[in-house]
Amino acid sequence: MKCRTSMEVVALLTIMMGATVQPSRAQIADPVLPMHAADSAQVAQAQVAEAVEPVQPAADSFEPVVFRQRNMSGPRLGVTVVSDHGEIWNHMNSQGYGRVISQFGWHFERQIAPRGGGPQFVIEAVPMVGGVEYGKIIPGITGAMGVRFPNGFEFGLGPNLVAVGGDKPVQTALVIAVGKCFDYGGVSLPVNVALTTSPDGNRASLIVGYAIQKTGN
Image (cartoon, rainbow, N blue to C red; front, side):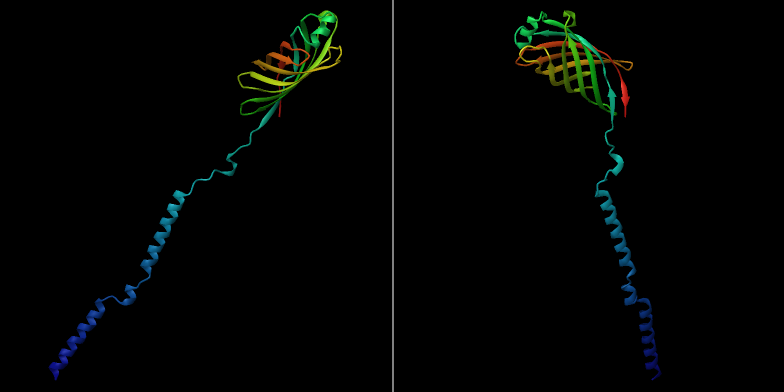
């Protein structure tokens, strides 16, 4: 009976020791490790999203183009050659004019130019009188819109009105002008060639002048 009891005690101790060494089901199902793994996965996904997402430019990185106005008004003088046919020449010839007449006037111009550089947008009006060397005057005015490039090359076109007389007191025409503007220390020296065309007769002019640059906001 004592021997049987001893065997039972030994078996009981063995069972108890095995229960102590084996991890419990609660330990095996410890939720701490799965929570750490989930956190790591979320961090990795966030890093990948940041790497893939394109960088958006700042809202204030695009600056608007700022323009400045320049007053390029100044005197103009030149000569005009009139074609030997058409209503204009017929009336000029009857009044004693030659085919070549002088021109004097004033050039009014407003110029819009980007502060960062680039083409300049020009609006101009040029009233002139011609033929003073014949003891008479032929008044006229030209309005033009054009572009002046940074290298000084310019072109424009617009309407022309001239009061020669005859059957039509005022003749209208289209002016096409090209030229070059030379800048020296704030003084602009334009040289322009203009072709004036209409059914009443064509004219070609060479006009030069100067202007002191006046800059405004």
